[in-house]
Image 1 (tube, rainbow, N blue to C red):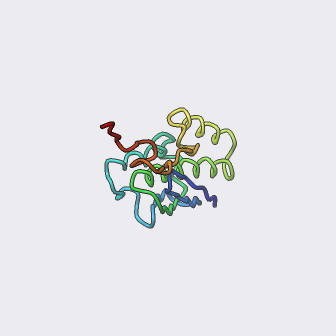
Image 2: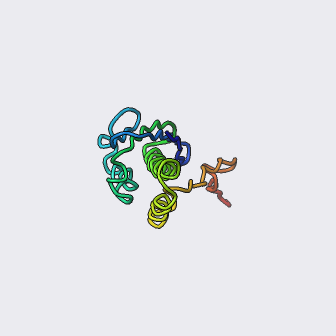
Image 3: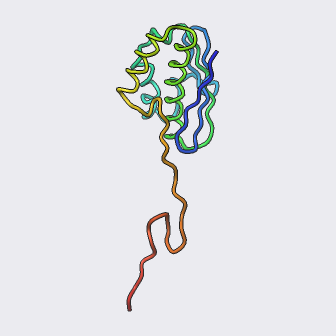
Length: 138
């Protein structure tokens, strides 16, 4: 079995990938029931890109915590993509792993490479990180 993780902002998803029969679960629930449904397609992206038959004989169980709905979804899809690549590297062959990796990176680099952007801390003299309070001259 291989363990990989995906991160986006403060959300961390850990994927545990092992030999099985095409199971995809997030926090114990099947991936098809994931809320919000507008983002559900995002999670299927790595599966659809690589092809369902590659996922036929592996189980992926994902634990996700932290962040909001959207960042959790992005963390999950990254964890799935990294899991399949790691699994193919460890248990199948280098050639097919390279093909999968090419396909994923060509579509969206954030599927394998984490997005380093973080929330910038608020400073004094304003309501946010960059915005300043309005000032009047008279």
